[in-house]
Length: 312
Image (cartoon, rainbow, N blue to C red; front, top):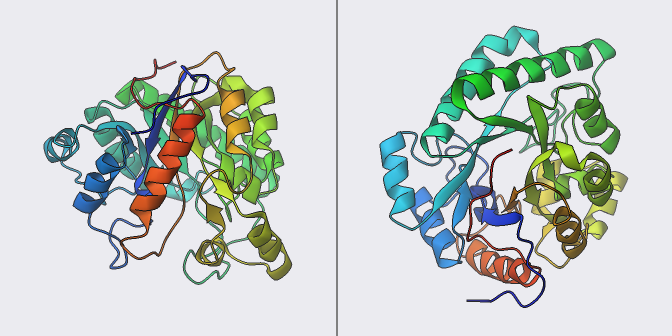
């Protein structure tokens, strides 16, 4: 197993997620079974995992603990989806998020990665909603985020970290900054996804430098700049971009993962840094070698998965 030869980023803890095994949905015939994912995650040398789409891994807390613990793994956080800008969906969204938060807390984790809905269909690329929000929708979104974050903290001891995403209303850097500027840091913070920031034309390192105190969790990934040119020239949806290989393993792609790790290591915070390389759909034998190479590269940048970050 690769040892760390350079400076150690002692405030950062490395993990991975089902996404790096081509998992986007709770069930899909093109995805590997969860037991293979867990087996290969451990085989690749990771100790921490994010839960991924609710229902992919077991939702019974005892069975989840058994499956994860048997492989020497621990849970860094949960993953959920919801439309904060649609008030008519609040009750249903809150019920679902509550289920995910309860499972996350039962697994001993304290972060819930919240992904806004995409305005293009993941498989067809067809637009399902206007790509920009009105001022009123933004006010609704930020107020709902604060309300949700307060509920999660008080009822589950789980921190809400909002995840910018390609083809969503929180994609570009101005949209990310609008979210952060319009919400309460006690209840809402950022899951900095370096790849999705790049996909939206933003600068992850700049966000770390200017909004470091609002970063509560990190997804580290890189995008192929040549495919990004195709995305803009051909108005591609994210699903098609992934099929063309927009997500690449480090050190390829943008942003430079070494620069990202160096900036994160300067923060006065302990953070999970979770590898996500979107691969859906992929052949079953594709993810493991990529996961091994990725962990080895990031270990060389000082990232270790040997300790649990203190929760702020």
